[in-house]
Length: 479
Image 1 (cartoon, rainbow, N blue to C red):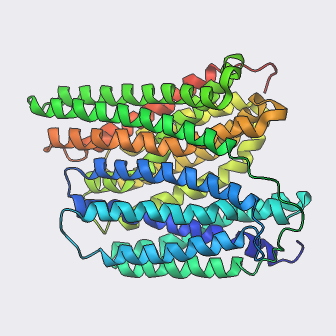
Image 2 (tube, rainbow, N blue to C red):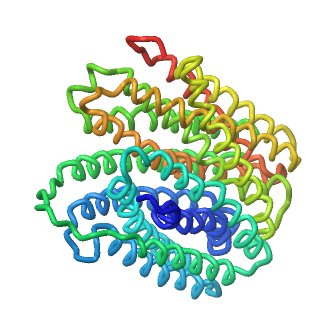
Image 3 (cartoon, one colour):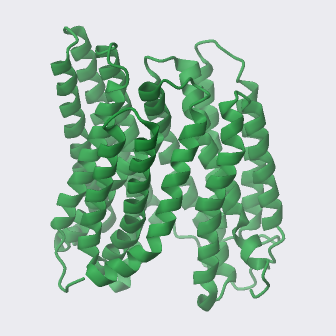
């Protein structure tokens, strides 16, 4: 593909997907708060995050495999992109139709719609990810991937900041939904102009074994998260029956740290054992690498998950008004991730992958401390910039470290396990963390924001633990 607009048409759908994802990240917490109320909003949102992320992981993997083996005359990928987007438009409209409802069952109706939005979105995205490998020569894939990154991060974040975030902040939820539908459908239509010929060679029979393995890993990890999360909620209910006090709230925080550490260790052990079998014993450093990746992402991903609730609690923003500063915070984080990712690769090669991963963990932890030190929006923005810089370096250095640990002839199999760490991080941090924030908030109602200070401190501990985990990684050569 050599025409200048091919860079756009092959990648533009990522702009629609990211606009939908970023706007949902601002709108969905507000809707949960609207349907559930103040006392249980973090728990309910954590529950929503758990199931939507696990569904997204499975659907995206399955659709990618199905589209790989597609022989549809319209093309391998485009029919999936069109179908998924069409269902997304219907489901986004249904979100708008329930905005005025107030009965007790509305949350579960919203929950169901959110699940189906993930199914539709990842049905399209699983196929979209195959366009560059299908259509772009190896010598051009770096440039096409760079354009993909631009659509996914800075352009999408800028678009959301100046459109849907402002509409949400003004209370115009329908306006935000309409903007999403316009952007998503426009990007889909441009993607359909990509010249994708139907498959002419014989189609290799579909091998479901990789998906079954992923299903087993996801199921095992989900059961661990559910079990530990329910234990945390039980402890929280017990603490609330006792006399509410700062000491009991701190005990709840220690329970939360223990729960997340246990889930990280047990979850990774199960997933690596299922994915690699007996080979896992021969490469313990790989398991420590996955633990490092999961622990860091538990901290960073969930800071953004609960950013709206934190800003509300610490700075007193109302439900809708918080969308504006939250979008600016996410924009700063996203831009500085982008700015540090490329030089992070050079620094990792220069100073060593392990060292850069450790440094990024320490910088992110310091950024959290700056954001928590006092209720000041400028300090929160500064902390977000530090976290963004650290995360850009982490993504590059951590992935480079993973490629060092995976056998060359089985890199896809080994590194595929890390996909579960990405999705699992959001599930672990939100499903276990939500009840911690709600419980400690209810226990200390005279200390606004204490529950989210506690929760964000736990995320900081998880990032610090990621530094300890990477120190356990042993390489046969210096990197």
